[in-house]
Image (cartoon, each protein chain N blue to C red):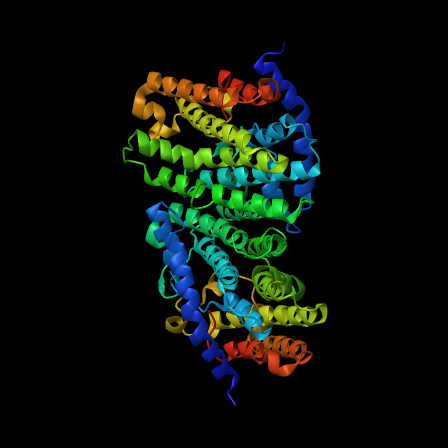
Length: 298
Length: 298
């Protein structure tokens, strides 16, 4: 039997080239403004683990459906949205980061003006891709609504604001959890929700999967916090030790490294328990995503 | 009989309070992050002529339909989107403007980080509002698709990129026209398109109205260019003479003031001719929008 790590690697080996190919081809046609198209393509095609779109693909495949162009459009759309959030997050006005995915950040390469616009363009394009699939109008609008809710001022943008305003403030654990839930959790929740929407999942299964998503999202952000302290800069392709330097609110800062590892373990257990409520053979692939935490984060 | 100016003023006196009330109430509930909610509200409620949402309302009213909450949501959504574009456009990384609508710009008041996020939030919220009306799923997804296309890398964002990259380059008239069509024209085109979608307009009428929209959009941007040279800073509520200082591509810069006025007149004539193809009594209100060019621009 394959280990979780092997199962996930096999899934990635099949799906990543297909997803990347889809993204590259479609981005090339996204704008008649050549510098804008270059700038958007530069950041999207810089790589990254594609965790969020892979989650969508994994839910759809686990539910027994074919990964057709509509599914790729929905998955790709989420990667556009995630990439926009990284570009804006790295801007001088925000975290002022010059390295991402092992390459100069978008504003270092194209200037902060074009980088701002490339982010705006990718965010808008994410909704364009969702609205132009051949799915039913009802399904498309449900996806738009779910994404706007997760990525907007009720979700990710609230978390980003918490994050930059939290500098030099000390959040308590409840506030920190809320920051992470909004900033990282909301999009991971959406990934699983989108998978459920694409597959007409039963309410019971959807409920368990969303609890998995929320626990996984929290684990993912705690792991990211821990990596900023103990990770390998070359492997992760971004500068580390920046959270501490910028006085960010993180799990290690609040609970110490041991406390952060314990919180990570608890989140993973919660997520596994949610998946245990489902027919196990069908959802092995999703459980394999926990093997991310055996290696290095994004 | 009312002059065009009186007709438009009367329409504004009824519709603006209703639209502003809708925006203020709904924005107040848009985010649990108080600083983000404040920052978004600050810029949206700073005023402005609300030209784009008013165009939607005017098309719907002219077609004989009631301006209910769904129509207000679609109109309000466009104002969110327009406001986001102003906030990002004013950022230090872009035009670096500190005055807008007679008030300090968003980043002067909240810092460039929160201003970037407020813009991102408003852009995302625009799609949220479109997706949550009680219109049919088919209509909602058509609106999302049209807005994403107009505001994204095929439209407004391409124009914004043309604009900042065009500094110190000299565009010819065709390039300048394309810049204006993308940067300003696309959203005005969308406003009329959205009005048509809301009213199930016939193809013939829609065709004439969209030609009106494109001519009006061009006239609007030429007028804005002219105002930057000859306008009254206090009345317009923003710094003027910045295009020349920033070496922007404008109609007065390319054609001189007289040439710019002539181009404005031509665009207005083209727009009026398009409306003349429609039953005139029904579309008087839309023609009244040309009276904007008797006063000062936004």
